[in-house]
Image (cartoon, rainbow, N blue to C red; front, top):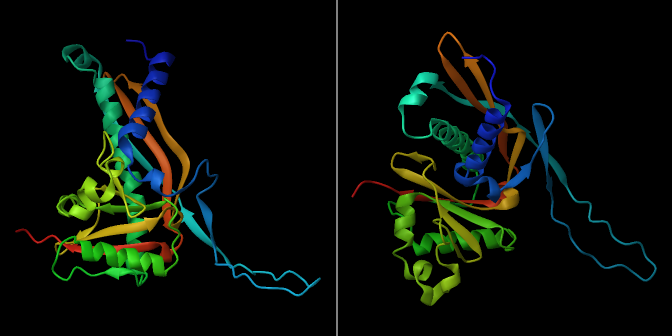
Length: 279
């Protein structure tokens, strides 16, 4: 077999990986601030303080808000997800091995993207965030949700349809048992779980389940946050490299990306801890 790889084959494979990453990979990338095409090993997200309005006298000087500006650094890391595609094996299988490898690589990179974002959210707990609802040996409940809602409001987190709440699947099942959350009688049919995905709107927030949230000693941490509280940076988005190895009679398919995430504003994250002790 020639060591040359068809350009059309490579382009098609790269397109399949990219589309699979967009369709099936990260669930959380669209819920946070994004900086793309970053040059270098890091970038910064700006945290802007609150302004205060004031009066002025006739012909007087307009008061200056003197907003605080804080630069939050976000470091990028390189990630790879590769596998072998044996030339003769491809002739013996009925399925499209290329599509399988593309999907697997996209899933792996997508999970890594979400892991970076979740780690940034979890860092709020380590940094002493005061908006923490303790587990109190109970699972997810309406009382915990309303307490978190109250804390976000007291912190003046914008209620502008850019709030998100991610919970574990056990907490999602518990939420679906709460009439105020699940019933169309309370939230309206248009805000029930979106077609084709497990997500819904409630209290001006998009709720969704996620399997990758941290758990320690049977205590699951769930996060209610504003989009601007977390920054995600991409220096190199998902890319694919395919090389032929004659000594293995196989192609090596390598999917890779360079990304990072950082906590920008700790006041925009509420943490809801839920007991997951087996029944």
